[in-house]
Length: 106
Image (tube, rainbow, N blue to C red; front, top):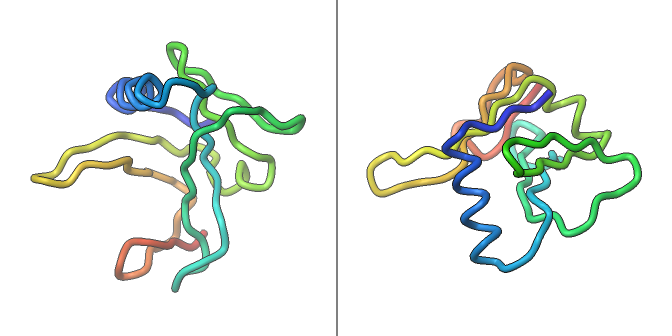
């Protein structure tokens, strides 16, 4: 299961409202970077047949079957640190991250 903090839920709702349409967000992984995998976060307008859907107070998080194995137990938060703000992924499956923080390894 993937979880979404209350702060992240509010941010996703705001983003979808500003966009004007969409079912929620899709989280996945792609092969890239120094450590091998990177998170991909995008709007979702259509759910595919084998997607897994997690819902949090009306916010849908959609995950494809391939990515689900890498994301099991992950928590998505939205944090503000100084002038920077963004989604933060706390994934218990990560063994390490590259120095720049863009990719990870399981």
